[in-house]
Amino acid sequence: MPLSRAYLALGSNLGDRCAQMQAALDRLSTAHGVCVVRASPIYENRAIGMQGEDFLNAVVEVTTHLQPEALLDACLSVESSLGRVRGDEWAPRPIDLDLLLYDAVELKTERLTLPHPRLVERDFVAQPLLDIAPQLRVQGQLLEAWVAALPEVALRPYTEVLLVGAS
Image 1 (cartoon, rainbow, N blue to C red):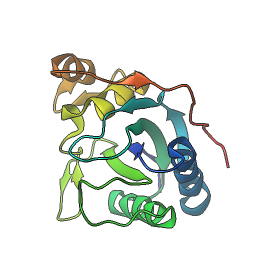
Image 2 (image 1 turned 90 degrees about the vertical axis):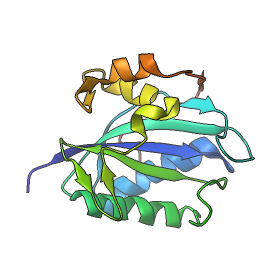
Image 3 (image 1 turned 90 degrees about the horizontal axis):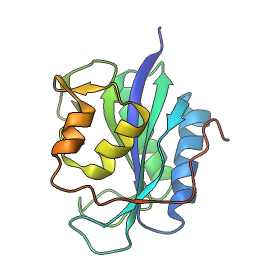
Image 4 (image 1 turned 180 degrees about the vertical axis):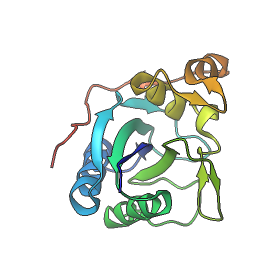
């Protein structure tokens, strides 16, 4: 089976946020055979719709043999292994992994919508994605145009970086 290219968003606003994001990448790589090709800078931003510490967010480009729903399952498994308990959508979380794009696949099931339905509405997703994939088109429009149209990009650069290929 050929390799597919996907983009994942990572976020954390509980505990050692950066370490949890790195641990998520490491576990995706070692336990699920997902290869991290490139990582965006990490940004810090306000917790939207919830109380708690500010979030750290980043986006990574990965290659994988997993199909979209299997990649979603791998992300959910990693979240669980790092202490994420799904319940209230607007609760603080040690780790959050979202599948944003998977090749040119457009998909809508009960479990997964591709491209991610709020990708172009969120500065903390769209800007890091633009950083690593400026040529991307989403819904027929360059990602750069989507970012330029956002009402606000309120992200603060974070000093630490995610290590690509770290285990």
